[in-house]
Length: 455
Image (cartoon, rainbow, N blue to C red):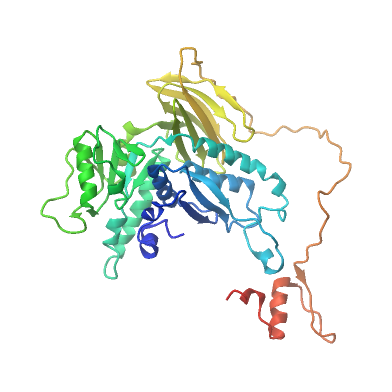
């Protein structure tokens, strides 16, 4: 639970990624309805490179009783787009007796009124999970993880400014790439020597089971000699290396007689626009909004399984719909896979300048799962126009007559506030929350509080 920042990793375990190397299924733990892109990306990068089937996450902890199905879906969707394929639910209660009833999140069990309907959420993720574990991820970009450069500024004297800027840059780059719809994997310098083949050939860098066409070196202060050697050979063979921001000054954290240079690499200024422009040729997906600009609220993952590809896109904005034109590199026949009812439907599309295009409207918190098959001469090449729908709700006369209510379970009377007294001659107290009453009475009787049992 200390994976999201360079600071938290350094203080707790040094580096998160090397801890996943011997795990069959790396796992993370995310509390509340929060977002930790780097936490998910670090774990999923290792599982991709190791050739494992997926990554797990303990999810929905501390989301409270009022967390909706929309929240359950939205929280799981962005993780699915980043490679989390197995959700460990927090939690199902055996009992909510005593102070347990004041814990949260809501129990995904009979204590919650909606538990019999929860299959609606689970069926969605089961279908997404099947597609997102097929074949291998289509990831053309690798990013050298900057943790070891952070270590050099982790100290007590005059290091706060550099440490803070490096952590911000770590977060910024991940956000720029993911919301710029450039999927990528982190590359751990500590794991790299065991992941690369000594006989690299061609313009792709093979790291375990993954192949990258371009490597980003992000604002590193130091670079390992082993990493430098791999990148130099990769660049010499025709691979692309992008130095984003400042170039490394040190080799193995020491001053070297030779400057750590990579011939034929390109240097770009540290900014979202410059970095994304340098990566344009490595795109597999573009999504344009109805205003003609790129949509910033989407995340995606693409999988390749033989001759097919599966693409999952989710709208992280739970409130705002967005009308889009989706463009996929290549010539494809496209079908939409409905993750709620299991149906699959072909959709018309057309190819322009080597990109397959279709129109789609993402509602708030919506997601889209597509199957891509190489286009044939018989494919439908027409674009299906969007159906305009009214934003107004029609006023209709009610056609249902109320006749009565049938309960699905016995009704209960909730006792959460009460008045109390210990002795018959005492006055009744004001209305007080029942757990506070319990503490007050135990204090007066010199008994230990229930909440102190684990202290």
